[in-house]
Image (cartoon, rainbow over all chains, first blue to last red; front, side):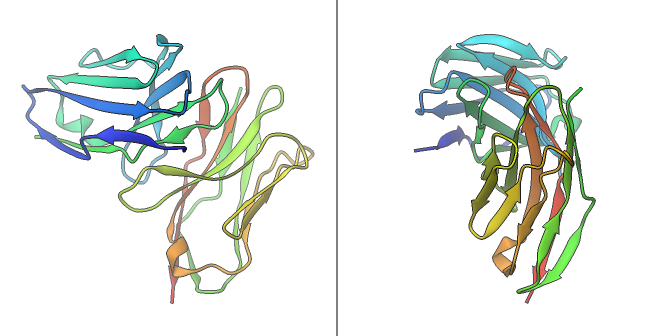
Amino acid sequence: DTEVTQTPKHLVMGMTNKKSLKCEQHMGHRAMYWYKQKAKKPPELMFVYSYEKLSINESVPSRFSPECPNSSLLNLHLHALQPEDSALYLCASSQAGLTQYFGPGTRLTVL
Amino acid sequence: GNSVTQMEGPVTLSEEAFLTINCTYTATGYPSLFWYVQYPGEGLQLLLKATKADDKGSNKGFEATYRKETTSFHLEKGSVQVSDSAVYFCALTANTGNQFYFGTGTSLTVIP
């Protein structure tokens, strides 16, 4: 099974809201990733967790806050977002830097 | 450094035409190479991969060969279908960490 699940599928939020995106995998992978993807562009790496520790933060604004509660779960907490943060947010997982498996994404709209 | 250069799109083909999407890379060490496909409104799906020179990845009629001498990993399919319409991303990982490097993506539209 190579499935990564993400919830919710769609999210609309105002600039003062707080919301969270969730990602789950049961492949035993020890690396998990958050990407942001704008239309017709490649995914941009935001965060990498390796063995439940944050290993890469690509200078992402503090209004995005990642969390890895355990080896199967990855959250992205959102607060005080801007309209330009509207995008598809993708989660992925991999084993030791090998093939990354992506979830279906959360389509986020910030009003 | 590591980078991927991918053929600019969009590409429009008639059904049953031959497809080539060019991908070249720059990498330190011995990278693994990937093609991902993204259908409208969906996440990225692994299409095929190759982990060492001269390996050929194949899946669903698509093929790509890891050519170290030309630093290339071109995607080919002999006869495209309307259902192949999607965006295709070439990517590499340098095997020294957890980071992937993506090309800019090539949008393919297949018309009946």
